[in-house]
Image 1 (cartoon, rainbow over the protein chains, first blue to last red):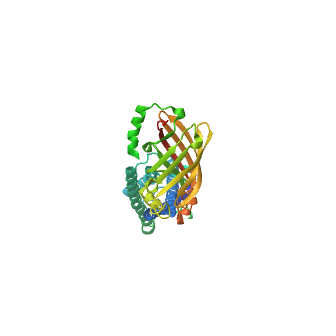
Image 2: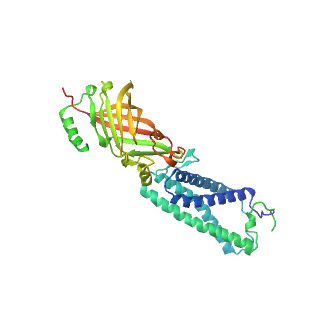
Image 3: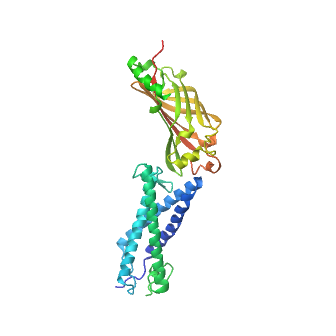
Length: 183
Length: 191
């Protein structure tokens, strides 16, 4: 039996789509927050919420993929502690990609502006309108995002280090558009 | 207006059991009445209300043709749900409360629509513009109180509520539902 050396096309597509959405949603959140109230701001806030819901759904799909597939192993040259660290970072990334949209959803409810996904599907309000709770959830949403920023930074730095410094196959397992199965 | 009512009511209840059929409801219970609105913002249903308004009503279900209503709303008392939005809607592009601090509704007539349903017609003056509006409402008696519940759709752009960039109705819908709930007691009949 041969072990796959690369992620499947599905996993690779979902990963890079998630990356794209995160790199759109995060700066959008930072930018819109500072704007004075305007129709433009209301639109950006809505788009940010829709993107967040999409990231949540995408993360559920990716966890379903993980539950039904074995990821290709990391190169054996990587020390065990680094492999465990990588697993830990991945686990935390998945946790944040679920927790951050949920914190935003709860914040919206607490601030009295429900989330209507794509302007079509209204999510239920899990908490009642409550200004203090809304402010608390806004703080939590922000702190979780700083956590995400730090973890994504480590994730990217590690991938680039393995690719350009160690010259191993770590990143190639996840790169699209390359011929697979070279060691 | 509020304080005297607190004295009237116990007096009223003590003096005269109210004969509902012949009563004219004209003592508005401001603290039991509400003026709310609902609209869509980016497809999201939103609600708010006005904290300060005064209502004068003369309504006898047996003499609907003689019924009258006047409402004055302190526009700065709006609560949209967030301080940021409250400040925004007080500004020039919205209500411009410095120049137009209040909205007035003065009825021109009331029609019976059958059962407990009625319609009040009148002029709504808002931001210097006066326009005809019609609002269906229901009336029911709960003990000594007459309860009026009604709603109508106001198109905000008819009154230039939300100018400039805010004319974009894809962000804030043009249709604003105004919902009123008025509780009034009947004065003792003068004969």
